Length: 516
Picture 1: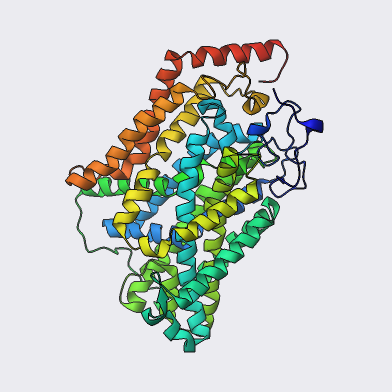
Picture 2: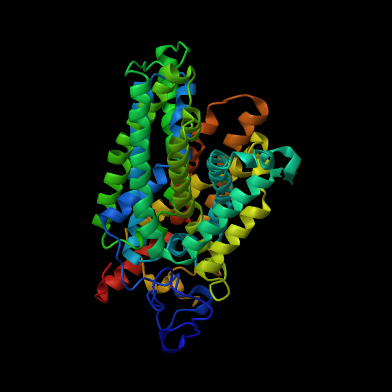
C-alpha cells in the first residue's frame, strides 16, 4: 500500500473544505488515489442544531420551493389538502434524511466516500457521477431562474435598460441583460463557494431567516390588500373522493421527489455535525416545523393573489412584480434572489464538488470540483433547454429516476447488511484485504442492483411518456426505485456473501476492542 508521508497531502493540490489545511486528516496508510484532505475524515465537527435548521431554511425558502408548493393547487386540491400533502411529504423527507445522515456523521466523511462501503472503493464513482451530473444541470437552471429575478430588479431600478432585455440584443438564446444577470450571480455564487464550507455555513445561516422576513412581509401585505377576504378553494376542478386521495398522494410524492437530490447527498453536510442528535434536532426544526410555517405562508399568499390581482399567482417574484412598487420589487426581488443563491450552493454546488473530487482526489480538490460544475453549468446553456419540457424530461427526468435506487442501496447496506458498522480506514485503501475492495474495487451486488432497479425506475418514467399509459407512475419513480434498490440489494448482498463478510468484519473489530 502506498503511504502518505507525515499523514499529509500537498497543500498546493488540495485544501480542506472550508477549514485550514489538515482539518480532514488522512491516515498514515490511506491510499492517495482515494484520499485528499477534503475527503478524509474531519478532525473537528462543528455544526450545531441551528446550522442544520438554517440549512433547511435555505433549502426550503427558495423560489423553486415556493413554486413547487404552489403548483400543487393545479392538481385540483383545496388549500387544506395542499397543506396536508406538504406536511406529510416533508415528514417523510425528514425520516429519510435522518437515515442517510447517520453514516456520514459518524464516519465524518462526505456522501461519495461513505458510498464506498456499499459500492466498493472504486465503484462509489458510479453514484458520485450520477449525482454530480444532476447537480451540475440544476445548478445552471437555478442560476438562470435567479438571474430572471435579478433582471426584474435591474429593470425596476434602471428602466432605460429594457431594450437590452429584448431579442434584438440576444445571443445563443439569451438577451444581453440576461447574460449580465446570469454572470453576476454566477460569480457571486462562485465567490461564496470558494471561501469554503465555513463561509457557506455563515451564508445559509443568513439566507433562511432573511427570506422569512420577506415572505412574512409579502403575506401580510397581500392579506391587507385583500381585506383578509380570501378563499381556500383555489381550483375550479370538482374531484371525487377517490380523485382527491390520488391527487394528494401524488402531491406527497412530488414533495419527496423535489428534495430527493439534497436528501441523497445530505451526508455531505451531516459530516460536519457535532453529533447525530444535533443533526436530528436540526432536521426536526428545519423540516416539519419550518415547513408548516412556510406552507402556511405559501397558501395564504397564493390565496390572496386572486382577490388582489384577479388570478392565482404561485411565483413569489411575479407576485412582487405585480405589486409594482419600487420598494417591494427591490427588496422582495433581491431577497428571493439571495434565497435561490442559497439553495443553489447548498443543493447543487457542494454535491458535485465532493463527487468530482472523489473521482480523482489527487488531481481534483473540493474547490476544483465545484468550479468544474460551475463551468459545466454555463456550457449547458440552461436558458435554452429549461423552457423545453422534452429536454428536461430526457435528461434530468431520466437521471433523477436513478436517485431512488442509489438511496435504497445506501440505506440497506448501512442499516441491515453492516448493522451500522463501518471501518473508516478501509474506505481509503485499495489493498485486496480491505473490507470494501470486493472485486477489483467494485461491489457486484451494488453495481447489478443499480443497473437492474435503475432500468426499472427509468422505464417507469419513459413508458408512460411514450405510451400515455399509467401516466401517474412517474410521480412515484423515486419510491419505486428506492424500494426495489433496497430489496434487490439485500438479496444480492446475501447471494454474493457481502452480508457474511460484513458480519465477520464487525466481529473482528469488536473482538479487537474497536468501537463498532
